[in-house]
Amino acid sequence: MNLRIREGKMKAIAISIGNELLNGRTVNSNASYIGRQLQETGIPLRRVLTVRDEPDEITSALRLALDQTEVVLLTGGLGPTHDDITLKVVADFFESELVFHPEVMARIEERYRERGRVLPEVNRRLAYVPEKAEVIMNPVGTAPGAHFRDQAGRQVFVMPGVPREMEGMMQSYVLPHLKQENRGANFTVHLYRTTGIAESRIFELCRSLFDQYPEFETAFLPKFTGVDIRITYREGEGPSNEKFQSFEQEFYGIIGAYIYTTEDIELEAVIGQLLNQRGWILAVA
Image (cartoon, rainbow, N blue to C red):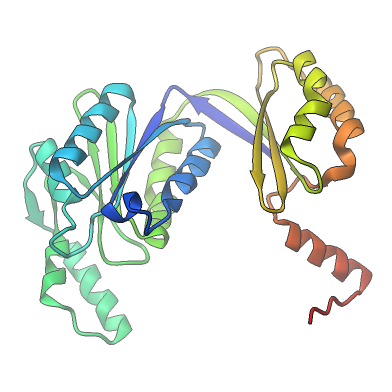
């Protein structure tokens, strides 16, 4: 995978809200998704803050984040129940009233009609959104999000904690908006997926090569099937294509036997492709 990305001046902090994230009952997959998507947009995620469903904690985290960055993404606490307080807390932070939004209400009613279900009365509170924010429509659920911008130009995006709904808002609204505003230098990311070799062994074998090419930033991402290696470099700041080709040639000479793909696909998918190419069938008992 060869990604060409434009990195601007924006930096981001994510705030994950929910007691379930802190008591170990729910894994915070939203933060990793946001980090990956922002990286490909050229906006580094500098920090992830996780707080309980408590107004004071949410407010403190938001104030801290805005003191340190230009973009804040909050997830969690946008449902219709009594513990879903995020939107009200953030609205209070920006001194904004919650007002009834007819279009949001119509979308909620449409969702329930499509499912053949009766709209619970408590869900009508989802149609009240901050007056001083842009509404982020929910493409797959009912709870809307919100986009705030303060006088200094700092932005806060509030999204649901349900991963599918958060991802829908990221793709339909947040990422397109940030890509349009973010400007800066281009940089390129190369992905190499390995298996059958440990992270420490890769570093041991390649250490002198990495020292020889310090302009190429290396990140190791170990997982169950192996180790992903990401090589990143900024364009126009020294390294040419020829220099990277020299680096890559040496890199493959050292660990090429362990690299199973340079695409963003998993090991099992690569194995499936190879089986199909050979017309083989894999049977597992």
